Image (cartoon, rainbow, N blue to C red; front, side):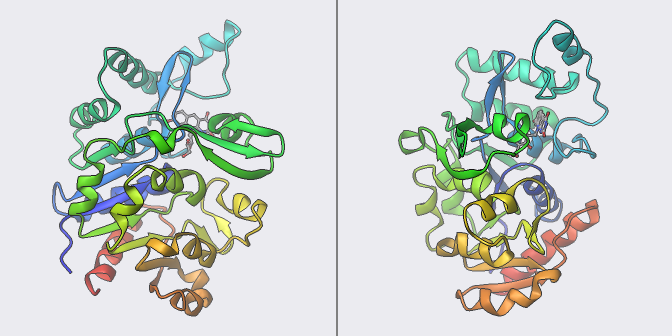
Length: 311
Ligand code: FO1
């Protein structure tokens, strides 16, 4: 199979790293990234799109290397002022990052759609890949917890993922439409890669957008496990699996996505699960999936392309 049109489904930091690797090894303009916008929210009057920004900053080479989100060489004067005046400081927006939120919020208020604003920012940042929000309409994720429904960022950042999870609500998803370009990119794709993002709150919101699941049907879809040795590489994915009554593992991730998958990529540390994942009817690639360097991102991307080319 030739791969010169690839669609990646991605959330934040882990997804962005693989997207960066794919972008480095694919021909120019071969890559479309469909990004989760369930985490988006309005904060300090500004429209914040954490996963879109993480993907774009990473592709532009200006992401904060320590956190994975936000900008490199950041300063915090504006937020310090907000806090000194009695405003909220729990969601850390740096000065450089704030500039982007100001401009996005201004453009959205003039009637531009999120996908148009994102395309324009990508051009300005020198990004060649096509980065699409999953929808131009808000589909906010609410986390159903033992303390009731919490908006995603309140659960994730303010409450540090402490409340016990019972489920997730993707508000408004049933009547939302995919952003322009999402379904046509899926239709044209030679392969779809589900990045190593959180299945529950990064990938499931994308799959919940009407038309996306149907767009995956019959496509060669490969997922990369965000769980290594029972732990999430970053974030609460393993805690979520456990609280929902599923032992966190690469196998559990494969089972989660199984109806859409042709192949699955898991870490060497989990190679004992290979036979059971094969029994789900999936092609399996066992490799090093932890991406700590740029070279790792590129190597993993190349290995995934070599893997799917054999199908
Ligand atoms: N994550 C945090 O844990 N704490 C923060 O203060 C924080 C601020 C922030 C600002 C801009 C941005 O684009 C992302 C930010 N994130 C922060 C990350 C974000 O909350 C999550 O990583 C994603 O929503 C989950 O993918």
